[in-house]
Image (cartoon, rainbow, N blue to C red; front, side, top):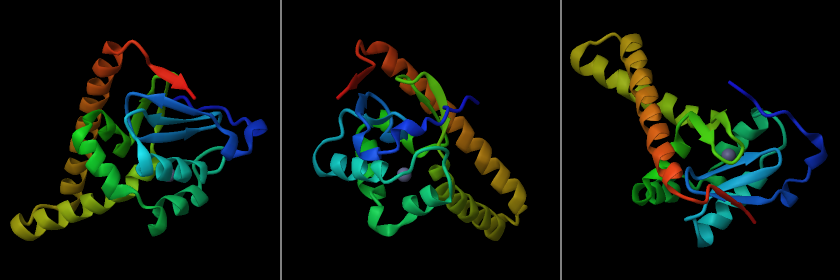
Length: 169
Ligand SMILES: [Zn+2]
C-alpha cells in the first residue's frame, strides 16, 4: 500500500487547507484535510478541530490517544450522519481511497471499535453455539473486509458520477 511521504515543512496543522470531497467523514493528510462536503455546522467544526489535533506524519500512539479521548468523540453524531449519507460509511472502515490525493489509505483508528465488536461477536457465538472463538473472530474479519470492499465500490461509483471530485477551500 502506498503511503504518503512525510513533509515536515507543513508542521502547523492549523494552516492546513480544507478539501471538500464527496465521500467519507474526514481524514488528515500531510498537506490538507479532506472532509465530506455535506458535513455542516457544529459537527463539521468539531470534526475539523479533531483532525487538526492530529500531528504530522504516520499514525502513532499520540494519534491513537487523540482518537479515543472521550471529549473528542464525535462518533455517534458521525454515525447518525453516515446513516443518512451512506457514502460517509467508508470513513468508519480500515481501507479508504482518497480521490483527491489518489492514494489508498489505512484508517488505524477504525481498528479499535472493530476489535471490540469482533470480540463481542466471537463471545456471543461461543456462548450460544460453542463455536471456536478464533474462527468466529476470523469470520468477523472476513465479513468486515467484504463490507469494506462493497463500500469502496459504492463510493467509487458515486464519485465517478459527480463532476467535481474535490474543492480546496
Ligand atoms: Zn482522528
